[in-house]
Length: 157
Picture 1 (cartoon, rainbow, N blue to C red):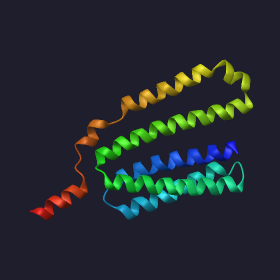
Picture 2 (picture 1 turned 90 degrees about the vertical axis):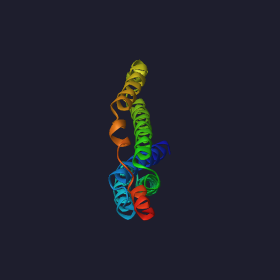
Picture 3 (picture 1 turned 45 degrees about the horizontal axis):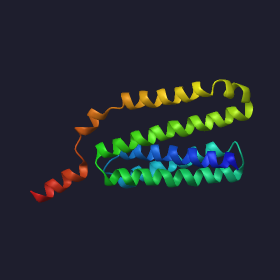
């Protein structure tokens, strides 16, 4: 049961991050961004769950589909800079969820190792999150206009 929850959480967070990133790349093309996000996130969720059982793979598939769709559609309603902020938040969430799932898998197999180096894993996770936050390209995302706002501006003129 715990492994099914980990599969669902990882598929959901990965699908959300994938939906945000594809939504940013294909901003202005809702159909294509949603379809690509659904397909890639669904395949990823299926692959994450296949190591456990068929039921877990189906759960991962549908969690990925739902998260990819939500990510692509939310970014389409926002500007690119706001979508980039959501992408950063989802990437930080993805890193945290992945590290906690890795810790749980290591706890099952190497319990003495995890007990000995538990704080090292926590510090490594925090450092990875800070590094991602520090290197995220905020300035390049702010200068790009939204395609929806450009269309509205041309309609007014």
